[in-house]
Image 1 (cartoon, helix red, strand yellow):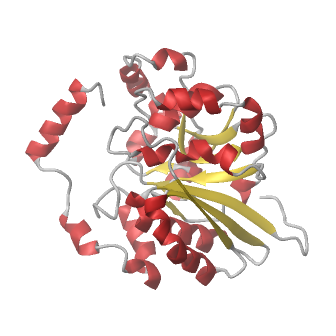
Image 2 (cartoon, rainbow, N blue to C red; image 1 turned 45 degrees about the vertical axis):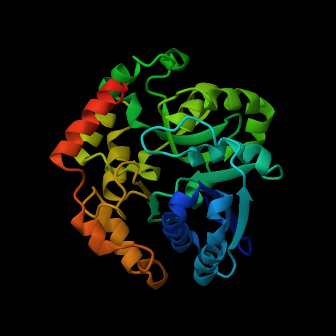
Length: 320
């Protein structure tokens, strides 16, 4: 980690994009960001880009940030979602496309750290924030889509040819250090708007991978530890050359960011690594009231019939 000079204050600029479905989880994510990153010489500048229906959470978010660090600041951007009519799939709403508006929405910001709302930050992000981005559109962690079986399955999709040659380089977009100045120079808005209307299974994540291939810096997996993958499955990243053994061990033993991309711990307590999320939330008096732990403990996923029906629907829909 780069040493911050005496008297110099570093400010990590981060952004969350969400709609009314994630107003509670984003409070927990923003709180964990502030708790983990703030030091005497490091504070946060947090931007929240949300739909109008989610705007009511502004004061609660501001309180969550300032209560933890009066020197950190929150900027709220409540907008009409320009991608409201975009393709929705896997239960993920069109709110996910809001990140595509960032280059134009934040014209005076050159670099920002995008974070999904379904994360838990457990350590400082200063080293991540200081990652060089010269010539790159963004930095991110390689995703599970690169694994051979998943790539083969996805290759059946009618648009997958647009990702030709990118196996091993496809990123999960839940944590992305965005070079906004570079993205503005690439002038991708029209292309992004067109792709958002297509039925891309991974939605805006596909869009970023398709349009920025060759301009992505890869981060170690500790910055985006996918909770839904158990350790033994995660080791496939090493076996298939997606990360080193050392990087794998770091991600398993000391993940900096846990990403609950599958089941959400606030809905299902027994999701993998969910107890860590609840441990943090229960340690914060201002967060415990936002979630129903008893309900989450009772829910163990869909019934056998529900799982079977869901599997049939996914197969018919070309999902995996």
